[in-house]
Length: 316
Image 1 (cartoon, rainbow, N blue to C red):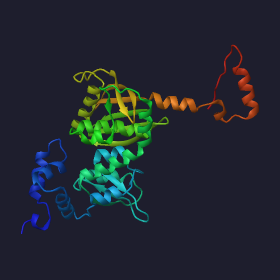
Image 2 (spheres, helix red, strand yellow):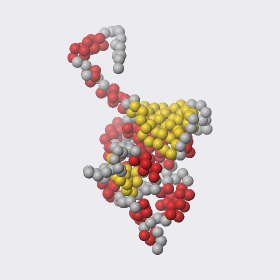
Image 3 (cartoon, rainbow, N blue to C red):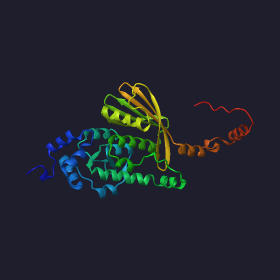
Image 4 (cartoon, rainbow, N blue to C red):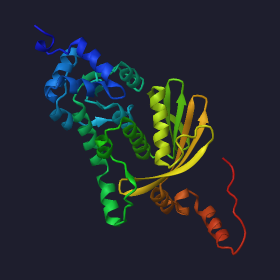
């Protein structure tokens, strides 16, 4: 009786897939080499890793949670967290052999995390359903504006990201998508000796939101940013500045790009310039909304009506 007869994936198959993977995901190569239907392949994975299998129907009926593990990390790593009342978080992964992923995700939670597996297509479908639901109102708003969309603008959505076959393109686009979803003003991509750290600046606070391992992948990520910003990918000794324009939830967003040499390669900082978001914030910012008492408000309005002069706003 062979390993396959009892629903197990042979060690030799795993080794061969790992050798053939190159820059691709191990789980993709393994599925191609085995040539099994998706449901059978996932069942074999579950038996081999001794983990429960979450089917497509159950996954689509579940509500994903992004407390701890944000949307971008889930998309990049092809995993999703499910939370059910009275139970520990359930991390559903496509690749049960990725121990580094489990370690990274485990740091996001203060409680033990259970593990299960599902087919990567089902996980992406679950994330896609969540994204479509969360952006429905924005999509309707974008449609009512009737604004013409530049054909050269790259649209950032989960569907466009998951449809792309390039790992680097998918990673960069999901990083931008996650930052826009989080309301970040800046994205910092910082190269290190063993990969890259991704940070967001939200409300002035810079926080780490993810990382990627492998110096080659970090280098390819910066190169992809340069291509999108129309910079010289061969020049790595001097800083370069450029611009990227992307589409997100029915509107166009500009990103100002700065790439600079660092000890371990190159770093990049992307400043997000969302004109519609700024316009919405300014339209809601009125003198009445600042919380002044009535006498102070009267003095301010009287001073503001003067034909000349200056109001100084100082202090913490």
